[in-house]
Length: 370
Ligand code: SF4
Image 1 (cartoon, rainbow, N blue to C red):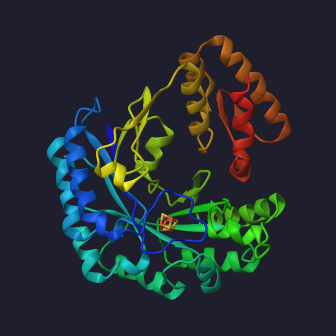
Image 2: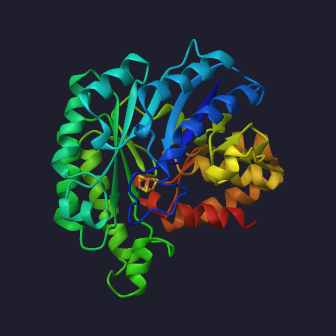
Image 3: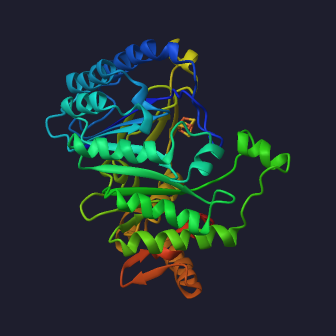
């Protein structure tokens, strides 16, 4: 089974840390939705397995879509794919877009999972990040969603924000847990040059945290979440049992997906495609770019995605896919990382333990270098 990702690159306000492709030119939204419906039809043959298991509205801010626009996009997926067994349809939402009426409409049309970009429950931190909502508004939005029947909600949090670690971070995690949501994604802030935060760092108005502080914050968060029975199943993701993100999990196990909309990426098992990162270019019909994945890229992709997860990978599976010679080299490197305490090997299973997942890039990078 496959997945469909629908990218809505519009935002009312730009967050201080945002380095994604997005635009505040909301007047283009209706045209983009129309074009996305056409793209769904044009790319109906992209996926060899037309049975869809998951659909995901990401952004940007998909909650800026009017209900009839979301409905139009869902209907287009149902017209050109087999959506009779869809298990999960997620919509990313900004808390202040979630009125009771809007939430009811989303549920009625089949959205069964909400991903709420809350980031922090500290108002000063939210202001610094230039978010549109306060902590109280976020709490009320989650409760409204629960009241109308959403029973699969995930919250995004950011850690590593200068000045908001320690007790302030612990408070945010505590508030998130108190809400009884099923899933929490927690991302380490990275400060990119072209963002407001990047400019603040350059002017000396903001000081980036050190790697040691980032690791300490990660461990604090990890402890709090796992003690609350949340399963740490991927570097940035925690879930109550049976509430792992199915759509995102398919990115990590190599399931093909079709990405629709400006800047959306697709994967068919052998190649990647990505749409132009420009609303104007997208509306003008710019063709997606494409990259065939050779043996090396497929191997790196395999290691990168599998080692981000708590499951890791099985050496026998790796050897079956990539051959004995390469497997022997990987086994040797993994053994070295095991001795350093960065990686676990349990009979045939190789994985990075939860407390070390923040350092997964370092381990994965070294496995690329054969
Ligand atoms: S909501 Fe997301 S995409 Fe939009 S500005 Fe903020 S971080 Fe960027």
